[in-house]
Image 1 (cartoon, rainbow, N blue to C red):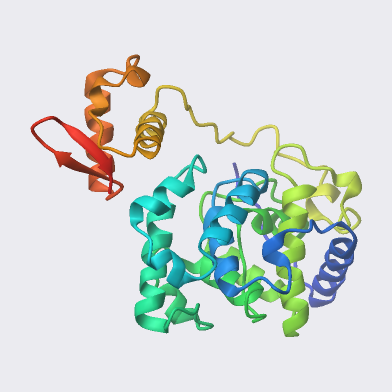
Image 2 (image 1 turned 45 degrees about the horizontal axis):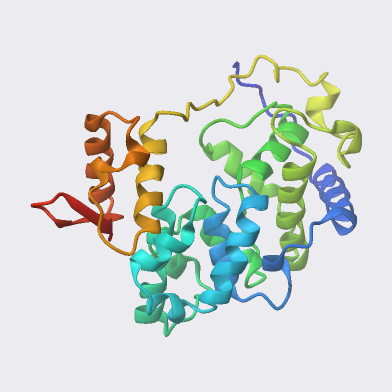
Length: 304
């Protein structure tokens, strides 16, 4: 897709758009437990890790069970990595469970079991990148930060730039524009972060945007240009059945369900999978630190 030039930047238009999105949010925000004032910084961090590439409808029950079982980093740190991976159930991308468990260990060792309100300290935690650190600073501690997930990128890209979909990675120009859009007042910045994310999730969606319901429809550069390029944009489809990722998930499901080590290759639940693929996936899980070979003679594996 051909790159589109930025329209001339206007701080006044920024303010108009930000107010419109914030006002919309006041009436349409979902009541999610990690948004409530009583939610701890740990609860916010857990939600952000779980929400990576996973929809809210799947995360919500898993988050509630997780926080009931491990309401503090110290609670999780006292459990085993296998406990964390088992509790992750079918959220997908189970390395996140491992990283979250490692993060809890680090919080206990380095920060007396508290989530730090400092960007550098957050970024030094296992599994915490720029987005997660910014989100925790904003939503847990009320700091002004540039919270730039896919939903926010899509809202800014369409309304400010006239671009149908964001690229695979954040460009420097994109980040600079997002930083200009964030309001100067801290409270307004926090509200904008939540509101723009919600608008992207519920209205300014990737493939079927509901522009008629959008508070930015009157000022959106993409709508003004006739909403071009969406049909021609490459679709990010990913095969699932029979892939290594699916087989890895099936292996982990087997191991989660068993209190004892298993000979995975002999399981009837994997009878339709080629032995070579099972071996490859097991090797990858061991390398990732999610699975351990506990009986080499019998070929038995368990959660690490």
